[in-house]
Length: 185
Image (cartoon, rainbow, N blue to C red; front, side, top):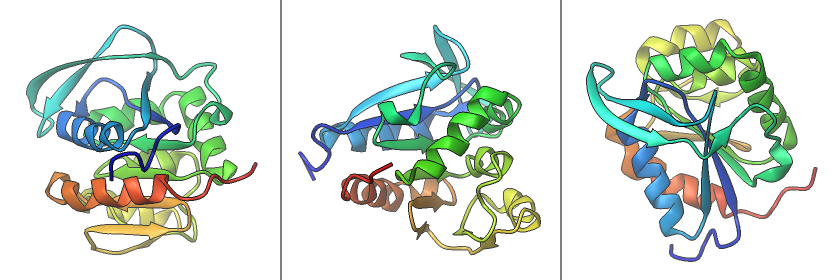
């Protein structure tokens, strides 16, 4: 799908403890399709990545802080998982507000594994059909989501996936969804 995302800017919101493959593989797919990806975090510098939440897996350089970022600057948003990453994001009011505003903008948002915790904290899962890592599903149900056990689920502008095992299908779907018509605010 080379060129499918030419001219599109995609925000990737992640913090310390992000699951390396859940940031790296989707980013590679988006970049390969022509997108400009921008890694946002709670600060600047680098964030530590993990492999299966437990093993050190290097670092990612942050492009800029989410503080002060707005959905108007981007065409789509990616929320990778890892357990620590979304837990840190959901504790930051500005990161949660950015996610809430992004969902409300009508632009596409994608999240994998534990990433939907941030969507839950932003109170944007109620009435939505989605999937996640199994341990997150009860939280999502309690917040009013319809939770299914499927590889990739798209409900309107929201795409979710279960785990690193689903990355090939997730990457294909987010390129497709992010390449859709630009939504008007």
